[in-house]
Image 1 (cartoon, rainbow, N blue to C red):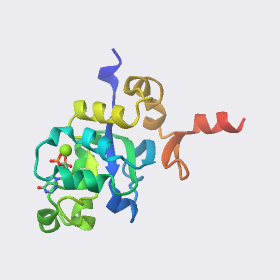
Image 2 (spheres, rainbow, N blue to C red):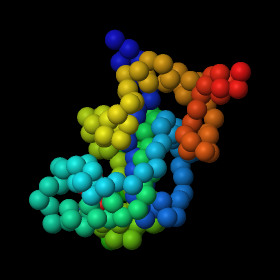
Image 3 (tube, rainbow, N blue to C red):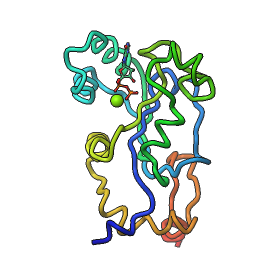
Length: 175
Ligand code: IDP
Ligand code: MG
């Protein structure tokens, strides 16, 4: 029943191994709700990309995705899903370099496989992908308990956690 009041949308973003080696963070444009740095095993990478089973690029995608650390983030803002995908740019880097050179993939992408970032493509995908990396996180609970702190600007960026934390949590922690 709270759903109609929701202002912020959540999406799942990945900074892939190529950008983690050369980080550039977008904390002005999105709230970083949760962040984890991890290394995917080939099995987990394959599971994450199971919609691409049978595609010619799957093997190289899975080996790339498990080749080094990635950052996974739950990002929030209004229209987070399309906005993050807009900032990432189109999938195919070799075209994007010419057609959308201002995007992340246009600026930093190396090949169609090594294209820097991932972003969920729909609310259903975002929910599934958030669960995949953050099984302890509840989207409903976040909207009910944390979203208002973000909407009111009562958050700051914690460099160590690589995420925004509410000032309430900070004062709880030091009191
Ligand atoms: P998306 O990441 O923009 O949503 P998808 O079509 O879901 O694009 O593909 C998932 C990932 O698979 C891409 O980000 C890219 O790393 C890789 N990929 C997609 N198409 C190709 C291709 O034609 N050649 C090589 N890799 C590809
Ligand atoms: Mg996709």
